[in-house]
Image (cartoon, rainbow, N blue to C red; front, side, top):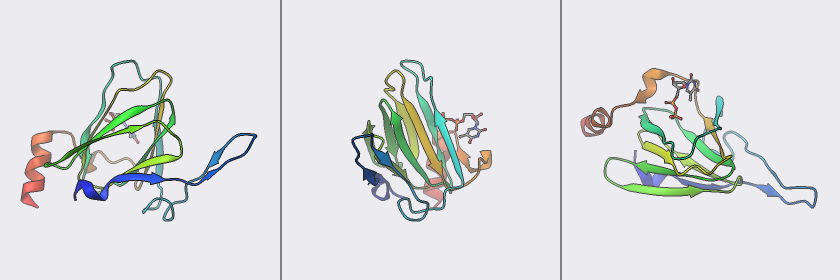
Length: 136
Ligand code: TYD
């Protein structure tokens, strides 16, 4: 998979004087059915998360509060995305190495995922990830 398939999805935003509303429908605003939601919060300053790739999992990453950076790498190219709005989602396709850093205080990172948690779907070692890419 290549990094060109990943990118920012502009989510619907219903603007209202009482506050804005954004919604996400599986298979419509994200190209997968949503099977799991998880979120990172109370992230201490300077912390780094991620540091892995998924074999099959697709994800959408949203900054629900505050901001942080997501660095994507496909074994050849690296791209840094700064997420700071809850109406933008970063779509991450399978076989992309990702790292998250630069968390602002009070930030919340929500992730929508195409499957349930499965440790067997992870590459947690970058060299093994590169070898799997080379093996095709
Ligand atoms: P990990 O995926 O390494 O987090 P991050 O990418 O944010 O650094 O997960 C951290 C721990 O949480 C690890 O022990 C696995 C566990 N975990 C679950 O049990 N269920 C989940 O849905 C997720 C994402 C993680």
